Length: 309
Ligand code: TUI
Image (tube, rainbow, N blue to C red; front, side, top):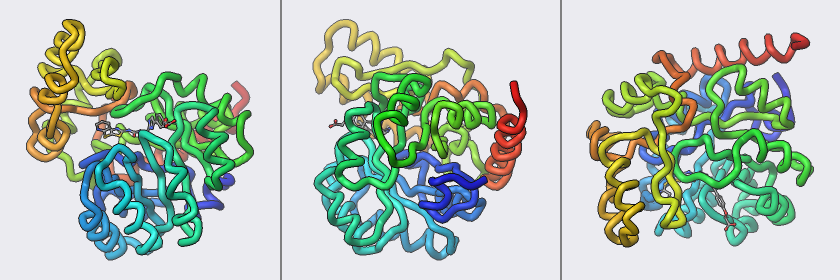
């Protein structure tokens, strides 16, 4: 399947893997890229030298293009922005903020830039700043989310800009991908389904919790702090929401979640840790390789796009 996204990124399938903190390390990124999609290394809150090492390791595993996702709330965002330019990674995506101040640096390094946006206003701003495409991420996603759903955000972003749009949030199979195309997207980004990929170096407890999840098993913590985060329900999230309702301070709430994602992903603490996942978790029932995930997605999508209703 060819779209402006496949041509822009030099990939064969318009499927981008989400830049999930702790999950999106070089094994997963290289496997997704090798299978024809675009793998991403998630820089999250990691120091710049860790990101450089991950880029080098991914290059040893694949000769296909891959990208780095920069989480703009990270204390290391400035240094990571510099490292991706030095390493001339093929693609940069950004999350949780406005990457305007890095655009010139990245464009000079020949990097394709795709900011994640949660509004058409930011999409327009990014287009004017020189972005090559935008990822319109609806609040069905796991992790840090905006206000709008994918169904409402994608067509409005599509109408607001001329650069291609990638849809994200709530997409987990060919039906979601075909629907995203109907909304005007030319590619999709998926996170949650790749958490359970064979190549994802993620604790078994985390993968099992995604596979066991039902449709209503996520909730959003942190609305009161201005950083809403979608996670799978557990003891931590229930306690967090109870404290939030009682009007707990930012510091109290932070205490509950600090280091929680790392503990869940690497140590398997899915009771007290932060198990970020999207609302589509309920649809994800099997473990597969990245190659199987991508070929199944493409087959289902093409079949649906070929038929009339
Ligand atoms: O960034 C994400 N998802 C994430 S980041 C993350 S790590 C984290 N840990 C603790 C606190 C916060 C984050 C876990 N999941 N997705 C991309 C995304 N970006 N979703 C929504 C946005 C977004 C929202 C508002 C981007 C820009 C924006 O407005 C920026 C502005 O300044 O106008």
